[in-house]
Length: 42
Image 1 (cartoon, rainbow, N blue to C red):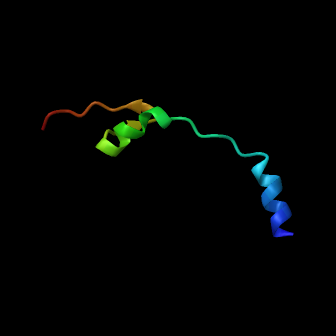
Image 2 (cartoon, rainbow, N blue to C red; image 1 turned 45 degrees about the horizontal axis):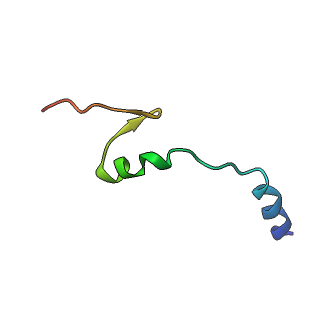
Protein backbone atom coordinates (compact mmCIF):
# COMPACT_ATOMS: atom_id res chain seq x y z
CA UNK A 1 0.00 0.00 0.00
CA UNK A 2 2.76 2.46 0.93
CA UNK A 3 4.62 1.64 -2.29
CA UNK A 4 1.57 2.51 -4.40
CA UNK A 5 1.09 5.78 -2.51
CA UNK A 6 4.73 6.75 -3.10
CA UNK A 7 4.53 5.91 -6.80
CA UNK A 8 1.36 8.00 -7.12
CA UNK A 9 2.99 10.97 -5.37
CA UNK A 10 6.12 10.70 -7.52
CA UNK A 11 4.07 11.41 -10.63
CA UNK A 12 3.06 14.79 -9.17
CA UNK A 13 6.53 15.97 -8.11
CA UNK A 14 8.19 18.78 -10.01
CA UNK A 15 11.82 19.71 -10.37
CA UNK A 16 12.95 22.61 -8.21
CA UNK A 17 14.62 25.53 -9.94
CA UNK A 18 17.70 27.43 -8.85
CA UNK A 19 20.53 25.03 -9.63
CA UNK A 20 22.50 27.95 -11.10
CA UNK A 21 22.44 29.70 -7.71
CA UNK A 22 23.95 26.82 -5.76
CA UNK A 23 27.53 28.23 -5.79
CA UNK A 24 26.23 31.55 -4.41
CA UNK A 25 24.33 29.77 -1.64
CA UNK A 26 27.47 27.83 -0.69
CA UNK A 27 29.36 31.16 -0.48
CA UNK A 28 26.73 32.45 1.95
CA UNK A 29 24.81 34.90 -0.27
CA UNK A 30 21.36 35.59 1.19
CA UNK A 31 18.22 35.35 -0.96
CA UNK A 32 14.70 36.53 -0.08
CA UNK A 33 11.78 35.58 -2.31
CA UNK A 34 14.26 34.48 -4.98
CA UNK A 35 16.07 37.83 -5.07
CA UNK A 36 19.65 38.38 -3.94
CA UNK A 37 19.89 40.62 -0.89
CA UNK A 38 22.58 43.26 -0.84
CA UNK A 39 24.50 43.34 2.41
CA UNK A 40 24.96 46.79 3.94
CA UNK A 41 28.41 47.66 5.27
CA UNK A 42 28.48 47.57 9.06
